[in-house]
Structures are given as structure tokens and as C-alpha cells.
Image (cartoon, rainbow, N blue to C red; front, side, top):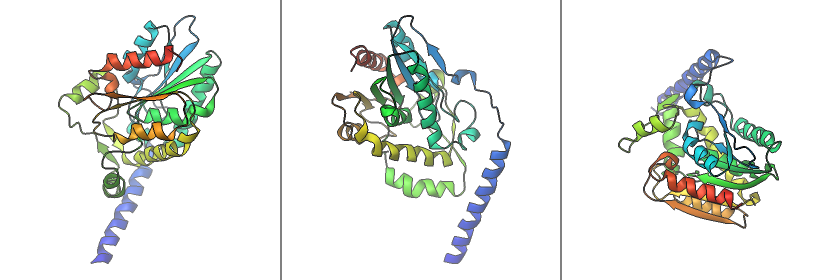
Length: 284
């Protein structure tokens, strides 16, 4: 009986490999970016400060529109990048490796360093991980803001060691599910993201999180860590982990009341925008 089960699982793995190979062959060399997901500059004439806005896993720069406009009104420029594999198709995301995200963020930092003296990295969800990883890259980086950044996921052991391997054995993509009423409509209006997640890409997300843990002790830049009191995706222990393991002399946690994981576009958006702008304006 065990031999039959193992044989069946082996067959599933082979079939998944064939399906993934066919998907890779169909991906276009130059795939257009969806209009709602395009990167954008919000330049403020005379400003020597800029916020590099790094979106989350499967999402896009659109989630930063409100923050970008708020910062501009405070005299702070911003640039919202688009990470490799995003803003096009889930199929393209499925072939991207975690180091490509890191390299791309570093390239954008180098570009901004030619024009601005002070760069602040602001990352939403996985974007916060990338901000922390890239924090030591340049002396022009003056501060880091993380928003709902994962270090520990909800039900992590069950998901990482049982559920994900099980689902990956017979599926390549998984549709997103919204447990909170009306959040899907809100997300579609204020953000743009894939509604289907390539499961193979979750392994790359996990690698980013693991690398974040390793690099945190070398993070010395001022830190503002923001997280929802009850995030349905990220454990509340993530924020305290970032604070305790980093070497920053100036750091603090701001807890957001009951809200959605992407609280940047939810009901406390004004409060979040104000805290971030103050952090940048004060230079800490």
C-alpha cells in the first residue's frame, strides 16, 4: 500500500514538472505591464529626501498612491518601484528567484543616490523584508519603515511543513481568498495584485524571510516598524523580532488597531501616512 502511495506522489511530482515546463515555454520575452501596476515617480522640486516605496508579494506600486501624495504635500519625493515578476502575470512571477528582487531594489537605490542625499526605504509586507535586507547597501539610506512585514507567519509550521508541500503536489497556482467581508472589493479599488499565487514563488518568499533574519543584526539605520494588532497573515511577534534583533539605536513599533494586512490603504491610512512622514521629516 505504501509503495502505491509513494508511486502516486512521484507521478504527481513528474506531472507538475511537465506542467511547469510548459508554462515557462509560454511566457513572452517582453510582457506588458498592466496600467494599474506601473511604477511611478512623485518628484518634489528642491527636495533632497526621497522615499523608495517597495510593494509586497504579488501586489504593485498602486498600494502606495495615497502615501506618495501625502509625502509630496510634506515636501518629500517618492519613487514606487515594480518588482521583477509583478504587474504582468502570475506565470512570469513563477520563474523569478528571490535574489532578483534584492538586486533590483539595490539598482533602484543606486539610481536614486545620484540625485538624492537622503533615501528612506519603505516596504509593505515582503517589501519591508527587502528594505531590511538592502538597508546596509548605501550610506545615503537614512531610515527604514516596515509595514506588516513577515518574520513569523500565522500558523507557520502547519503551512510551511504540511499544507504548502501538500498543495504543491497537485496544484501550481492557488486563488487568493479574502476572509474579511468587503476586503476584496476594497483591495481591487485601492490596489492592484495578482488574484492567483504561483505556489513555487512562495518558496522564494520564504527565502527572503529567512535572509531577513540573518541580516537583521547588521541593520543599524533608524527603524519604524508598523503592524496590525491582529494580522490574519503575519504573527504579531514579527514586529518585536525585527526590533529586538536589529542593531538600530533609534527604533520603535507603532501598532495599528483592528485592520487589514495591507493597512496602508485601510481605515487608518491617514494615521499611517502621518507617522511615516514624521519619521522622514525628523530624519529618524
